[in-house]
Image (tube, rainbow, N blue to C red; front, side, top):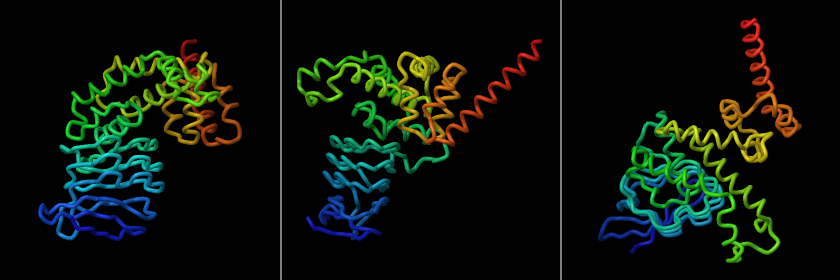
Length: 305
């Protein structure tokens, strides 16, 4: 095995070269790049493997592109990459080790670099594939070759529904018995625990509705009903809390909320108060939406008269 180091714009990638097989393994990285493109060959050897822990705990990397030649990604290759949001790679048969994206909480998309990026299917499947690790904990769905097929989407939605239908308190007693949380922490409070489970469900439901390729109408209705049951003004308000606290100035989520019917006469003023002085653009959007809704209602009322 021969060691090789290749410079990047702000660092370097390390490779182990096997001259007998003509292949190379990405064995490590050091530097400050936020975006990386892994080449398909290094010094005459085909880059075939992302090695074990190759990018483990990288704190700066946001996007990485893997070549068509990759056939295996080893254990924990990208684990704990705190800012990694996007991986581009070929959707073909590929071996994957355990925990390759473990606790990459910001990972949003795993994109098929060979597909038409303007197609809705391409975009939606990229988000759904990333969520397999971050939201579903379903390793069997981390399947690049079949991602986006009807069968895969059906399995994804089945797994999602099983998560959505779990009791909010499920797992709490086991957690306490096993001592998985520190004594006195919020997680030891049942109400807090249940709220966090509802937030997880809200994030999952919003993700699937915003990337709804191949979504059956009955499943859509179930997800929409769940989100509306937890909007501002309901007994529990996790849908609103997730939008406000986690996507505070991202207009897409407020547009989604209004399209869902989650902003109404009963909760509009309370939402304005929650937004305070910190989210002026979002307040302006909701005020405009509220005003337009009133105009439509007034016009309809005049027409009826």
